[in-house]
Length: 276
Image (cartoon, rainbow, N blue to C red):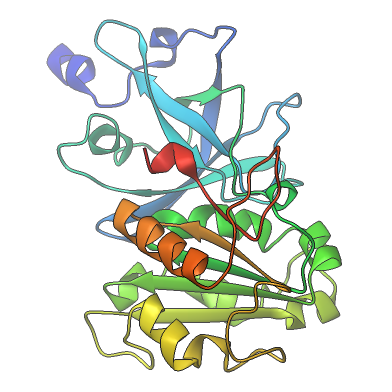
């Protein structure tokens, strides 16, 4: 019976070692969206501070005892007492093939230094904030869209999520309800959040890729602003696959947008750590 314990994908707590780079936290909740997609929540150290939209390293010990860490965007708002992450399951992935077995009460590594460019600090002031995402690229936007400070900066906050299957629309109910029950957002802020889901490989009310919705104007149909991108007043964040980010970045630049960074704010931002 000892073989089962040895080969368990989640090592016991005594296999974890805190350091200057990582703390050892505890899983508080796991939500399975479908066979390939799940959300996990963990304890948050009192000293852990982050800006909405940033990412941090999380992980498990390897067989040699060293941490196996991967970058994950924080999906929870910056005021939350817990930290939330959205993950896909890659069966041959060194981390996610093990992480899929994690359950409430299990230990997990959390990096101590959040960072990233999908933050409002990297954008110039504007009137509309568009968050364009595919797959788990929605995660940082779930942090931003629940941050009251974002609604102080923009008249409208537009969350766009493109997936292959309807069941891949994580957080759909929450976003369709305009974040009903959020403890910090005012009603007028919630009303200024616009959710645009699209599904590319199954029947749905919207079935085109994001670029098609931009080109034919459907991306803007619920907005009170211009029915097209306006570099002067619109700000855009991109998070998804490498191909998606590169294609949309090129399209935005062709429309007169300039990429921003923490040290030089611009009109759109991408997470360069995930692009390479």
